[in-house]
Amino acid sequence: MTPVLPPAPADWLAPQPLAQARALPAHCYTDPQAGERDRVAVLARGWQLVARESELARPGDHALAEVAGVPLVLVRDREGVLRALHNVCRHRAGPLAACAGSGLERLSCRYHGWTYALDGRLLGAPGMARVPGFDPREIRLPQARLACWQGLVFACLDEAAPAFAEVVEGIEARLAGVSLAAMRPERRVVYRVDCDWKLYVDNYLEGYHVRCVHPGLSGLLDVQAYATTLSRWHSLQASPLDSADALYGSGEALYWFIFPNTMINLLPGRLQTNRVLPDGPGRCTVVFDYFYAPGQADPQRVAADLAFSDTVQAEDAAICAAVQRGMASGSWSPGRLNPAQEQGVWHFHELLRAAWRGAS
Image 1: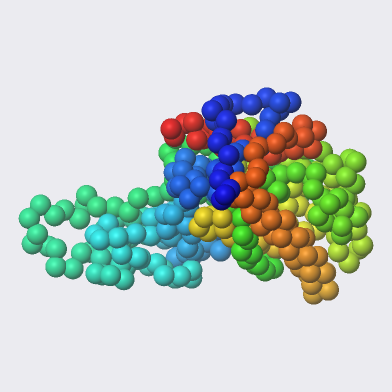
Image 2 (image 1 turned 180 degrees about the horizontal axis):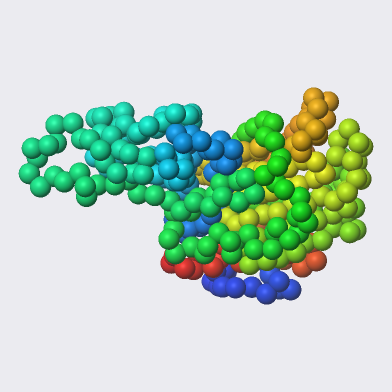
């Protein structure tokens, strides 16, 4: 007999107290329709990391991004205003900007040549001047909301979403004067993982698995002192850190998760940001950007950091893919969460449940 997914509890969307909480049902990770629900209810309504502010410093600088399936072009206009315009022509949905760059003066559709100012106004529409009732003054590219914070650029499609300052409230106080904006970008690495994007986030949000999955990382962190702090829209995992000077040295490892899909990992002299993006049923893409404090990006240190991080990510990718298969097997029903070590997972699940309830 072919296994089938067990039925979800009737109240799986209801809020759960941490002490009695169970994991989300398997269908949240395996149902092909779950991706569309996530796109509409979660990803289209939250703030997402889309760029570095240094990429967009001068008039005409522009970069491409995508939020919940909506293509965006981030561009700074001649007055210095930074915008996130929908990168979709209002005529017949043709593409506008094709790549990141500088010196942009206007946007031109590559399908039929309609042109737009960098504030989104339609400037020209070939052959449309004599069309009855056509008024270019009525046509404008939609914009996403933008926020620049600590040298990072975030975008949000939903006008009803909380202000970005509410989302990151409390993080700067915990940074204790460390400037993320002062960190210099070094490189980008992209991982493709055979698991649902939410499963990858679940895995990130707890140190419970570190001893079993990450022998190298376990030796650097003080698992006994590992602590999770929950805020309204973000959570922080913190641990004392003791590593060789060629890697990170000693100090503290700080791992922030900003709902719905951004991670900020801060170690002495080094910053790493992660974006977790759905990539079809049962798959996700994780974009890692590496930054270093001035004077800390010597080749040996960068190579050691990248090699160590790549090992940890390979370990995470393997266990996440195995868990995805387990969830799809029909064997599993949601187990109890560990209240002492999986608070971050519970917090994420509660935010997801609230978002899904709000969209139902």
